[in-house]
Amino acid sequence: MNILQLVMIDKRLTTSSKVIFAYLYSCFDERGVCSKSRDEFSIELNIGKDTFDKNVRKLAYYGYIYIYRSFFCKNVYALPNNIEKIFEPKLEKDDKKTKDWRRSKLNWRELMRDTI
Image 1 (cartoon, rainbow, N blue to C red):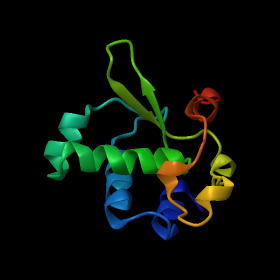
Image 2: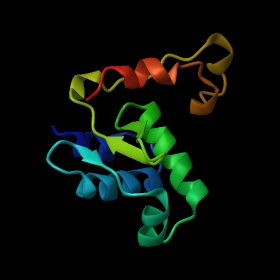
Image 3: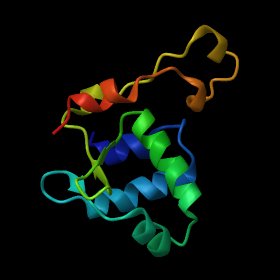
């Protein structure tokens, strides 16, 4: 099962997250990196920048993509090297009631450290 199939069957993701991932996946090069700007994605997908940001952060949180800052202060999106690294994040005690992905205390730097 490839990463695109995993995203499509993941019930935690919204339809817009899945569409954004499918479009990102089509833009990745042979190294698994995409450096298109957020503005380009917003225009091409006809969605707002906030909607794009929210859904990309959700994809990154669940481990389907990694987000880096390039030298030119532009986001670069990358696929994980290992599909096995895709995980369900552990929620803190107070987060178990809401299961809201934004409230988790996950350290983003640790998540993005071991790619590329």
